[in-house]
Amino acid sequence: MLVNTGGQITGTMDKMAVHRTGALHLAFSIFIFNSKGQLLLQQRAFNKYHSGGLWTNTCCSHPKLGENTTAAAHRRLQEEMGMACQLKEVFNFTYRHEFENGLIEHEFDRVFMGYSDEQPVPNPQEVAACRYIDTATLANDIAAQPEIYTPWLRICIGRVLEQYQKERKTLQEL
Image 1: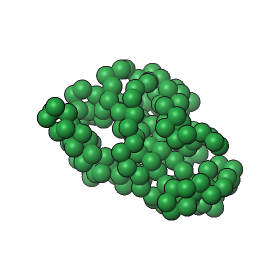
Image 2: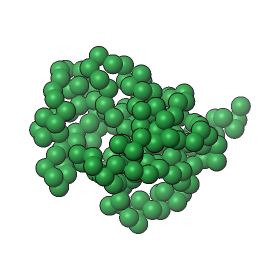
Image 3: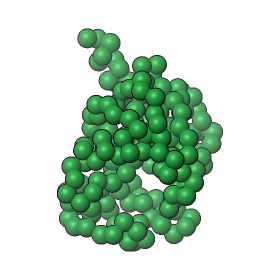
Image 4: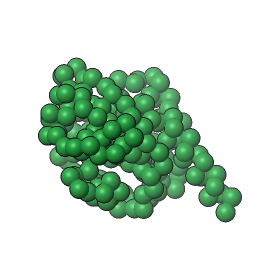
């Protein structure tokens, strides 16, 4: 779904046309943490139309036409990772990235966070591998090897980890 810079839907366009033209469209990214404070990452399937084989957040996708973004996030978490948990929208951001294959990702990305100790059951058509990683290790690894991570993860991970620390502190104070 095409959106304006405020995230309001303005129209529709075919998925590949969106990525060829760089039209701003609606997306979501999910970050699942376990009780050890580790983030669940996935390695995108190698046959993806862009960013195949790169490591990224737990799950990301686009809502279907007329689908609520929160419902889409729950649906895709189940479809990609075989998981279900409560999700909370924590912020949004907009980014634009041009890939070597000529495709352009220009997204208004709604970010969801969740907590689960459930073991993922990844869909091999979507996910090549997955792993839980300590957040400090992830931050260091992104700094050392940015090329193995997706552009959107590199852009938003700092803000995600800040939000995670705030949520964790609030839970500890209860």
